[in-house]
Length: 156
Ligand code: DAT
Image (cartoon, rainbow, N blue to C red):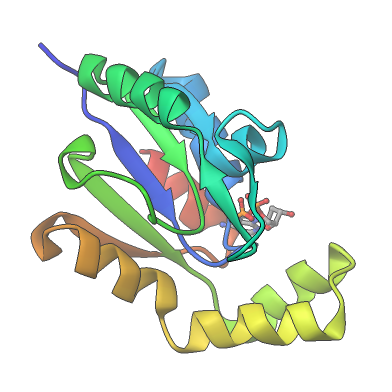
């Protein structure tokens, strides 16, 4: 039996990492944080000078593809830019009320500009739009992520 692959997405600060790690430790599924991979330079191969955007390291994406084929992977990323539709059996978009999200991001020491951008991203449901435009709507579910009890509910 192939275990499912789960994508956890949403605006920064909604709780993807917290939920992803907890789920992984309780279920034995493998947790992959795409932001961390990118920061470690494992997914991107430098920067395109002309367009000033990161260049994906194709070899690393193929590696990711192989892991997806094996199944049982929880992927945590704020977007779903380069993911292939067939990778995921289910996509969860975590949602947090603006006031709560604002406080969480403030604690992270985000600048006013970055705070505003992220709150707007949450208000305009950018991650949900992105998830439903790149995956079948019936596998995309929104989950509230405001209180610790909601985290527990999801795990059970
Ligand atoms: P993300 O990975 O989406 O950026 P995170 O997992 O780092 O978010 O969580 C950001 C902060 O919010 C962190 O201090 C933990 C807290 N948090 C996450 N989920 C929560 C929940 N359901 N209830 C209360 N706090 C939560």
